[in-house]
Image 1 (cartoon, rainbow, N blue to C red):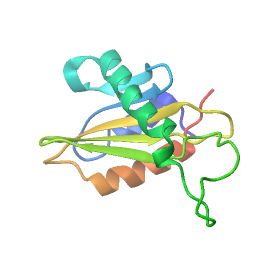
Image 2 (tube, rainbow, N blue to C red):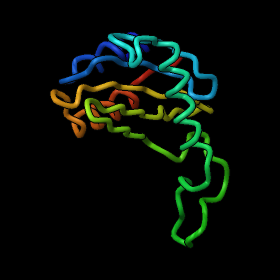
Image 3 (cartoon, rainbow, N blue to C red):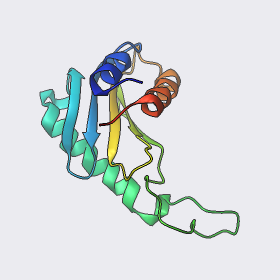
Length: 136
């Protein structure tokens, strides 16, 4: 089971990856970074990524609906959103929320070059990485 550094190094092996970060989306703090940062500043990129993640995770529009047609009952320990994809003319930003057995507020942010990156492969690998990630 990989820790933060190993998880980020594995993420960098994906085709077209320019940078990766593990971010606490409630505080905007970068827990670990590798490669380039969008905007050339890892801390600013982490804060901006966290702001986007909070908007998706905390608004009822994105809450899963149960079979009865209403919002799921009970309190989720993890956000209802699995991942977010932001597409620009030159790159993809993929944010994958890390599901844990405790109340987690961590996500993996991957920055991909659009010409060389494979969005579908990145999403699959990110799911695997976040499932195996060990947070201490």
